[in-house]
Length: 90
Length: 90
Length: 90
Length: 90
Image 1 (cartoon, helix red, strand yellow):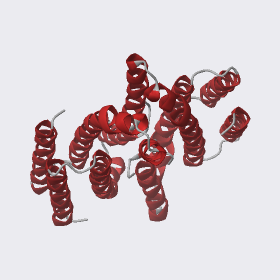
Image 2 (cartoon, one colour; image 1 turned 180 degrees about the vertical axis):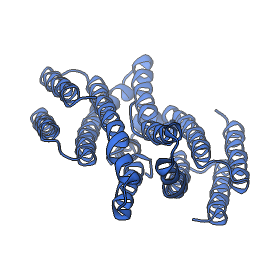
Image 3 (tube, chains in turn blue, green, red, yellow; image 1 turned 45 degrees about the horizontal axis):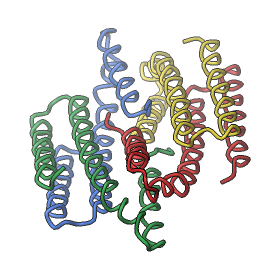
């Protein structure tokens, strides 16, 4: 995905959040507001996923195929750390 | 938490997302962008948590102490559904 | 869901985990093992969900309809805490 | 981490789950049971994390440094898919 597409999707999330602010102003039912917040979070997850896809297919492959072992280790550690953060550990 | 506080926090998330768009424009490293997206998601989770707190201490108590069994059932089902959505089942 | 059903499902998860141990012994591909671990976690999430359903429809309703405000507060706080734990905040 | 260590930790989770079955039999308070289930899930997440660490530092590096582009693509796709599964999308 291109920068433009990522920023378009981020702008959509921004608009979504502005919509949630209006819902709060209008006194919309709490549970419906929480559901909209979850939908915005889900949209952000999809954007992260697209960015990670770019990353894996460019930086990660370049670093791992490259000659610098410390670079290799760095990209591997970042992927591992990302997994740990998203993977539930309560 | 008051409406004003919730909307202030939502506006902060909006600002955060605009900052992420600039990072994308500037070609910031993918992993750093993903980390910022996760931070925005975490801020949204805290807002949901505050809204749920209001909800549990007002609507839920009123409905459960009220005389309408269908209202009681409705609020209980909403809480259960919320748990299922956040409680990942992969 | 009855105690017997919950324990039957917990025993199934136990059996699932023993199966994963055999996969590890047999040198099965890492990603396939991780997928099985995630499936066991998803089965545990469904068991939690069933237990919460019982809880909401018994203890929570009794406490909230009861005359002890501290009991009411206690069950509400537990639900809120549970949501915070499952609602990832990274 | 060696196979033996992974299986030792899986056996600990098995024991944990047997303990939860006894809690269910003994009629322990629902919320305490749910907390123990979450602890077992967290232990499983740590095991996945250790297995992924092995995987990234062996299979993934070998495949990406190897000469077969389809192998490279396969390991990259698996990592991406894993991230999508753990990353909340509600």
